[in-house]
Length: 313
Image 1 (cartoon, one colour):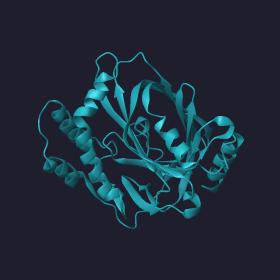
Image 2 (cartoon, one colour):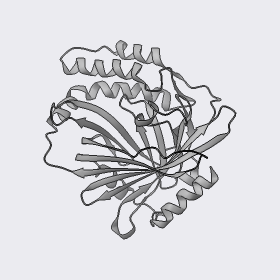
Image 3 (cartoon, one colour):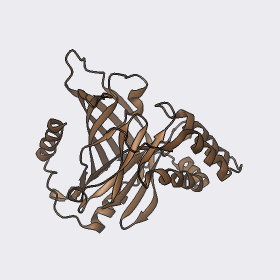
């Protein structure tokens, strides 16, 4: 992956976002919190450089939605942002992804093998003055983490991560079997109209013997544009009814991800065996029913276990 790291660094250097100035903790915190709000979101993914002989470029992917970003936790060195999607016609709410930000975090989880995330120490040289962003899927299962500093060149607030691994995104794993991991550099930028999330992805086939083949590079661009034309009340109502429940779910995940060696999921790649019962329990709460802690524990007992200490990278 050395040339991948070099390529990512060259790309980011060209944008003027490498070698950030020493960060101001309060300014960084405020930049992260600034991502809260109500947005129309456009998602775009395009394969760019083709690396496997004979490989044909996959079709571009375009999608979008209406999304509100809510601040769940807020302290000077830790911010948790929850994303909620709202269908404009039906008002149906879907709990979407979550992003946790921690200043100079001592460790983070890393995608190491199928359905396995190892908890690893962040090197001091990477961590100094840096924020670690960890991203979680709809059921709060882990996806990926990245560590990097905020920069403010020319008055533009931008955070750029180091290179890290993540599993296939949901848009891919139901229709792709020619690769099984993404090597990713993420970049978040505040804009006058909202914020953006850029992804510099390399699709990689990681083999059991430790060898790997790069398939293609991909550029992802998620554009969050502020809106006042969407009724997000259903999302706020959903979160009022279920926030306490999801806090308990996060607590159980933290029991695995807050220490070595990490977590292994016993579900299929789509994770639906665990997502469905968690979403059902949340819906029960919204409908006025009670959900016992033992019911949450039963889902985790069935589908989640501690990762083996020797899981391959």
